[in-house]
Image 1 (cartoon, one colour):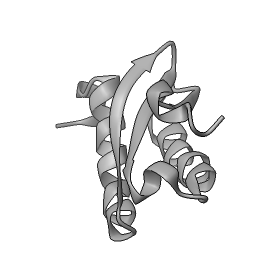
Image 2 (cartoon, one colour):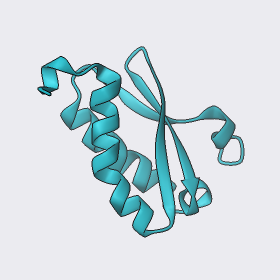
Image 3 (cartoon, helix red, strand yellow):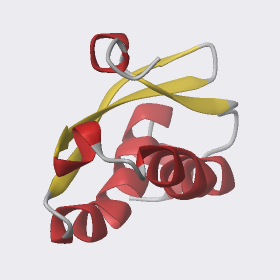
Image 4 (cartoon, helix red, strand yellow):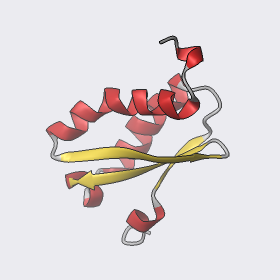
Amino acid sequence: MEKEELSKEEQIIQVIDKIRPYILRDGGDVEFVSLDDGIVTVRMLGACAHCLSLDETLFGGIEAMILDEVEGVRGVALAVEDADWYY
């Protein structure tokens, strides 16, 4: 299926699926939660949920790739229920 034929959500999930093997290798995982007004919300799971490198993974990896590959995305955020401990 061509990129243009995929919905934004499907494009985002494809990018996350490219990143997932590297995150799984470190004992974590990431899942797409939603897309709202250009902001992609993801949930970090496993070892990634409370990792000290969460910012780098979330913004330097996941966000950077999604911004590069999916037109119209403005940023990535951590799911609110997961962010309570973090902020």
